[in-house]
Amino acid sequence: MTTGVRRRMGVEERRQQLIGVALELFAQRSPDEVSIDEIAAAAGISRPLVYHYFPGKLSLYEAALKRASEDLASRFAEPHEGPLGTRLLRVMRRYFDFVDDHGPGFAALLRGGPAVGSSTTNALINSVRQKAYEHILSHLEITDPPPRLELLVRSWISLAESTALIWLDGKRIPREELQLQLVHDFAALTAVTAAYDEELKELLRPVLGGEPADGPFGLLVTRLIALAT
Amino acid sequence: MTTGVRRRMGVEERRQQLIGVALELFAQRSPDEVSIDEIAAAAGISRPLVYHYFPGKLSLYEAALKRASEDLASRFAEPHEGPLGTRLLRVMRRYFDFVDDHGPGFAALLRGGPAVGSSTTNALINSVRQKAYEHILSHLEITDPPPRLELLVRSWISLAESTALIWLDGKRIPREELQLQLVHDFAALTAVTAAYDEELKELLRPVLGGEPADGPFGLLVTRLIALAT
Image 1 (cartoon, chains in turn brown, blue):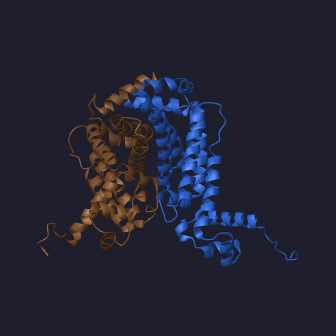
Image 2 (image 1 turned 90 degrees about the horizontal axis):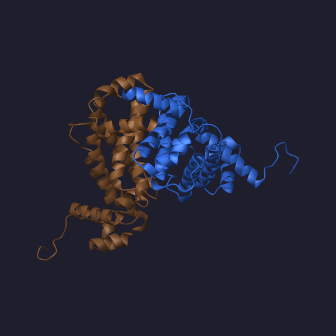
Image 3 (image 1 turned 135 degrees about the vertical axis):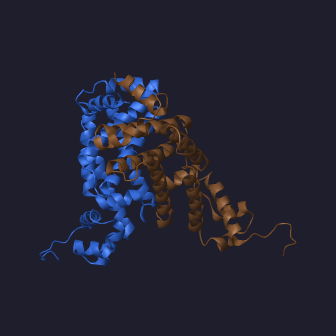
């Protein structure tokens, strides 16, 4: 059994290979359009053998989504050093790297499709959003966020998702612009919330006060004032 | 047949009644948790008779969603008169009226669930978003939006959705605040985009220039300047 040129893969190794193959195909075309036959062919195994490792396309899709979710969440990690705007900009670069690498799969997932209604799929999407939320709070150094701050952070995360999704539809705007714009959007939405909420203003002051005038936050305030006058 | 006290309903009339009953139930609990038996009981007819009008729960759900979508889209209509910020604020009030009236159904739809993956459901959601987008462009008096403006408007619509969705989860912030905040968010995101794009700045200047100092837009600028200095 060990004399063949092609080494026989263990169960887990084969599963991981199939997940990788599926992710590569989902990066080129929507998962709806990728058949088990194609995945089998790309992995160099038979269709029945795919079903031996994954009982159906949904289970392979969910396993692929799980790996992609872990990959994405790992990109949120950022040292707690330096200006906040610069930290967020670095995370945005890695976020768009991911979106760029997984385009059709990312779009199909967030636009809704046959697999999206599954509870596993929804739980994975929500766990990534939750991790993004927790990372941002930890950088803001806030452990017990009031409802308006929670709303601000969670709704900005949704804005980042929809911005990436709209960008994917034709890529008509350079992604570098959108990465920076999302940092500015965060600052702008924070300013709106803080302008009407004294508690939040005080909570965010020590954090935002540390931003340099030529960082993404400082630049925005300068430009906003110029625009308004 | 016509002597009974209860008049017999025509097919279309009965269908409309069932849709209304379903929407009322979906406004109290997630559609996943509402059974055909409950809908039948609330409509005062037998379970098999429900299936006579709707072949399955999904088709009843889709019909209910269609009516709700038309209801929501009709609330976007707003006369092209007066300051833009005030117009948008009135639409936001009607939007939150709708969200408030359809809470669990709205949340279940946008959070994803068993019915959400259907192509009919997705098409209905997208048609409402598209109508919101077209209404906003028509108020901005722009017919051929550059990509950055399209992104701005579409991503703000997604922000409004997620804000409403987060609000529904506990209603911990007065909705009046969020209605106004979304108008301010629109102004802030517009400012971010215009600050980095001369074409858009020129495109939006005649429109935003007409805003009164005490309108929602003018108020925001005043507060932002106070916050930044």
